[in-house]
Length: 271
Image (tube, rainbow, N blue to C red; front, top):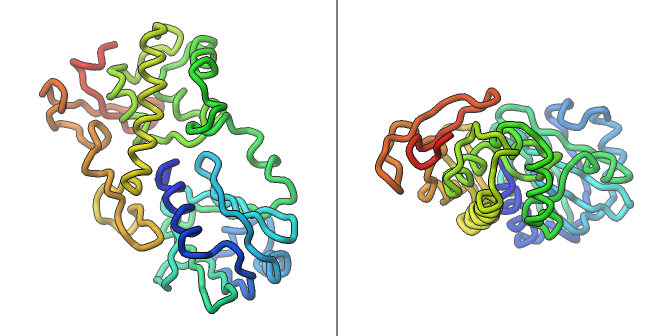
């Protein structure tokens, strides 16, 4: 579930808690598939002794630069998160200098760590990060106009824009008053600009609020401090099927678009 705002929140918290600059003294792998294609033993040999440099993010990928020259690329997938305290679903534990342990937990076991010599091997398939200058209005408009696909799945296509997921795609489409099944090539210049601005807006607001958590289940998003994302208080569409649209009062409808649950306002977001 973690999308750009949740991953950015985690990256900022890891930096704030001083994870950067610490040497990796030990590694415990409790779920070997997390580090494939390496075995747990190979993975440990590769990273023990390296110092964690800058912690950054591209799209939904967390990026740990290592002093060895290698890079750890971490995708949280459905339920991955980090903590400085142990928990029942810890899949990897990094013992760091300064008596700090960093716990990677993942109730669903879908998250993956990629140790690579060149991060481009993994990141080259991504489009520009949705909050960088590379994701410009001209780029976005060109990508939308040159295709004839429903707009919702196109927004989820990481080769078009990196970082958007189901929650923030629904939110951006609601803000821009665009139906998720509209064909991208049918959008006017004004609609494209409105959607472009909405994407930037909902992502920035999501970061400001520490991400989105919906519900209290074990698989729900938690930040490094173990807190739920506060953005759930500001969600306008996602997960609100049957509730009144905050703009017009019409009950929101839930459907499935490209195999993804999708919520929209049938009055504000017309086909």
